[in-house]
Length: 418
Ligand SMILES: [Zn+2]
Image: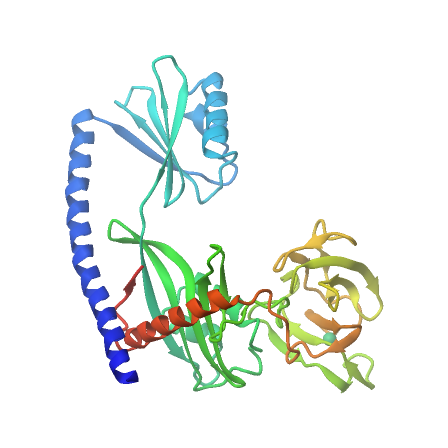
């Protein structure tokens, strides 16, 4: 029974991949034709295009004035962009602006602001001298690709991930997800395998960027960790474990990604500075001075202070029962004061070596109902679990995804069209 079902589902994956191959060929042909045509038209019109990449220090008015616009035009263009395209400022090393003229000596007749590969804002001037704008959403073709790897002797998850061909941005997201469930110091060993299913976005047959992480699997020491991205009936997406329980926990075990644990939680250890044995009520992560410290979870700052042991420290209350503490900071982040609320991942301060400390590191504590607990082993509550209707759908979706991944594992050059 199970076998028959497997075959059906695998065949449907094969069919999907084949259909997609045909579709892509058609798209590619259509694009070549349309490109040829566009190029031809612009040649006949004698359009002159110049593309400007916004650099640090550039302003919209500065760039427009350099193109020969008047101050009156500049303020009109700025207000149209703000009102109709919600663009109020330019982002250096990201935004591009294209200026189009009908000839080298002619004034600019069209401006195209390009804030992302998926969105273009076209500005044109009508006969009565008013600027208007039109937003064009670029259609994307999204494919799910699969990468898997193995931890080698002396490896880190990061190195193994890079070797498996997982892009750095995706790897950072995977790290963030796994950090809810894993202790990278103690759960990572040679021989462990991992896999990631993530999106690649294409436009015109060309890869433009990576999308979201759809599924992650890691053979951790304390059991397999699996997470799947799933969209609920209410339209909100989240990550869930294989049983449909929320994978995003209210707190992170390791606030700083990729930081090595240099001292674990213990009820008795010899203090490196004091020299005598006393409890170590938190976990130490080695990181260089100035490394941003993200809040382990959303909450309210209840202490931002200095004492002899902790140096500069911040304490956050997350809900009725959990608090976290971050010590030895070199400095606090702007706006982090007692009473302020913080989001999960928001920088609250920077690594340092203030207080009783032998070198730059983050000392991190989780306090549950007033009692210190081991951040690496404490069972943490999930932010959201699925309701029964969503859960049923999730389980079905997960099975399809698992089978798809099994196929992709055998054919790493295949992908699933989304
Ligand atoms: Zn410590």
